[in-house]
Image (tube, rainbow, N blue to C red; front, side):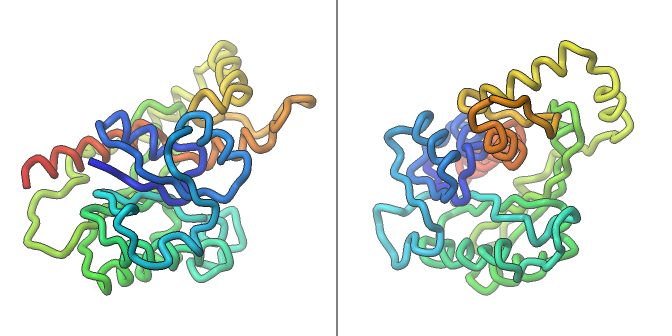
Length: 251
C-alpha cells in the first residue's frame, strides 16, 4: 500500500506506516528544519513545501491508498489561544479536506490534540461526510504504547461510505493513567540522560522529548525539541497502519 503524508513534520506517521509495510509516495511540509530531517531519511520521496498549493487539481501521479497527517493544533490546544479549527493555523484543515476530496484515497488518517473534540470536531466529521467518507475515532495515549508520559491525541480513520462493520481502531483496550504517571516518577537519571540524547539526535530518531529546556550551544536546539514534541508517536502510527493493511487484505 502507498501513502502520502500531509503536515509531515519529522516523519512520525511516515516511519510508523513504513514499519507497518506501506511505502511513502510524497510528503508535504513547510518547516525548513523538518524538511531537512525528511530529506535525510526519505531522500527519494517527492516533497512539497505548501499544503495550500499541493494537489491544486487531480494528478494521477499523486494517487495513494492512504493520506495521513496531523494538521496544526495551535488554535485548538488548551495551551494556545483556543480560536478553534477556524483559526489561522488550525484552519489549514480546510486544505487537508480539499486534498482528500481531490485525490479520494481508500483511507484517511487524521491526528490532533484531544481538545479537537471540543473545538472543531464537528467540522472534521462534517467535511469528511460531505465528500463521501465515513469516520471512526479514538483518543490514543502515547503512554499506552510504551512512552513514559500520557500524551493523549485523537486519531480519526475515514474511508469511503460503505456498509463496513469492522472498525479499524477496535482492539485498543485503554490504559491506566496512574500507572503511566508512576513510571514517569521512577525513570531515574539514566532515562533522563537518554531523553537529552534524543533531543540532540532528533535527525536520527523519531521519539518525543520529556524535557522542555535545551542546553546552550546545541545547534537547532529549539527546532529539535519542537519537532520531536510535535511528532506523531511512531508506535501508534504503526499500530494504526497495521490495522489498515490488515483491513485492505480482507476486502
